[in-house]
Length: 575
Image 1 (cartoon, rainbow, N blue to C red):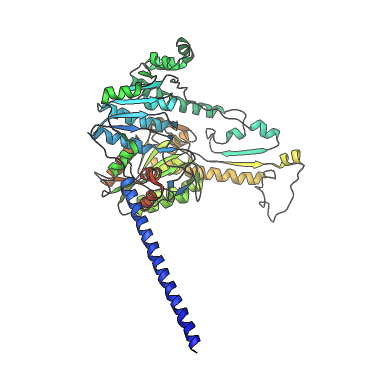
Image 2: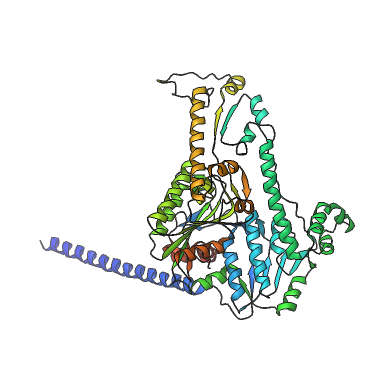
């Protein structure tokens, strides 16, 4: 009895010791977690705090990678790009930083470093260039530098009052255009039957699958478009550099001769033509900065925007809804505008109390009809049921389905260089029956309960009656598209018919009354603020899988890169 009782007491003592040990372990773990959180807070609030903006600071705009309207990182957490395959920089942040720098007495000058800019669209480079030109007009010096200058880089740099090119570089604007393969004959040779159903001959999408060369209608339309874009480039650069337009155009057209005169030295050829002001041979850039500004402290444009943002959190908000990339119905992805994602962003913006207006930041060539119409209906609901003004801000492209969305806005603001219009619909039907038989010896067979069963199977020849269904559907959707354009834009059916199918520059679209105003993202925000009755405001981005309340957590986890991504995506761009 006694022995049994002793065993029970010994077991109880062991349990108590184990319980005390576990309690100590629990306290240690909780203590470690507490101090870990403290460390993260210190890193987040102190270590990752953007630098101070001192008096006499030089604002540095240094775009790295692609200049974009919204991030397209394939890997993200709550919309924050993590280890993106290609670097990207948000156009709106750079423009906002430059605009703020104009009125900030602490900013004494601007340096635009274009060495790492890889890709930028027609409208994006023009918008950035115009912002730089306004900064220059304020009387503050602007320096631009790069190892070489192509179309985009030079359009941006031309707005500076001093341009430096590397000794091994050059200025080589090659103009605008495009070439693509036409597969009509090749597909026929392989036995592939392609049927293209489209509303207008100038609706160029997919015609390369049925033709051997560009159609005359498309050639005329594209000629007008690229002519407009190049004229805008030439006029803007000539104005910025105070050159005769004809002299600039002649120099570009005969660049080989001028390069030969400089014995192949592209930098020297550019200097002789007055396209640059100095050649970097080592130390020139630093010497110029010191001579003009006294070697001031530098502040990065994104850090500068972030610092200013902290002082505006209490203000009402203009929500920016990016519609960037091809339109698809449902969920999107990296660089793809999914209708569900855009509508969800609109809904979250509408349900955010501080939001007083929306700006659709559109850069898309169009896509799925259902995607465009579902987003348009969400915009219509926002205006009519939520009483929130909506302004469309068009980027490099806002054509076809993207323009379908834009027309529902209270106001459409476009860059002159924007590619827009393309009012129309198309559909493609492919048949591989002959190809399968000719090359693989494969025969298709089967049965169905009606003549429509399997009528769109790619392994069968297209049934003519089914083809009529596609044709009727395309005609119906096209007619609906034209009707809403006429209704929303206040145009007659005849006017819309004359414009249908054509792809226009923003400059021409303004003349045709397809858009309302010429301007960039800042102009669109000002217009939205006026419609909402705001005199001061902040800006917040609402994107795919984005909850702006998670910004702080993301910043703790991923440090400086994530901080920049979080700030540029979460409403840091102001004005």
